[in-house]
Image (cartoon, rainbow, N blue to C red; front, top):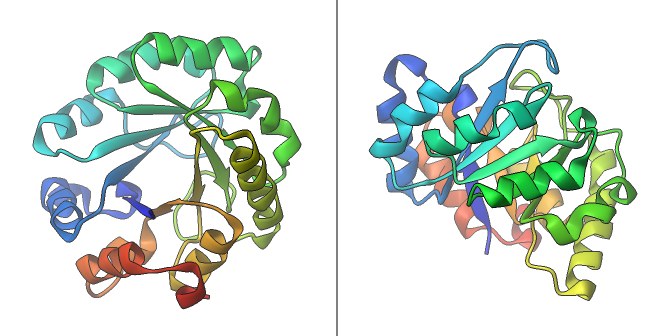
Length: 221
């Protein structure tokens, strides 16, 4: 089943409650929260106070993508704020396995994100600790970038390994997702689509959510 995770980075922050309700009513299962610190990526977005304000207003699964230096220092804060999944970047971690176990100890699902220059081989050692792998299909930092297709073979290798090993791990793709690239991602083996601009900057965001929910790989190529 395809999971649609609208990214609020592209929502109207003056009407955030409305924009979250809109995608929830359309059937989206997750909400993707791009949390940037201005250090690991050249942008600042939201912090735990925003996550805490969102939590009581939606039943959606909160997918917190922590684009932070030293994310282990903030895991408990975002867990208390109400995130359901804490996804950290491999590039920021000195002891990845220990940080992933720290997330699990907080009662949250653990995700590991990698930038477009990383390979499946970089994440494979940690798959037994994970609930989700996030492949970035743009360089993190800003919405609206062009999709990088070089990540697709890495997703395919990851899906084949997960299937062969019978691991309960989701594969998320984030960056440049639209009706064309979503099909490529689904064909490669992703099952969670984080989409921001394609949903929130479309003429009918609810229709976009419904399209991705109903799509099958062969239909959206």
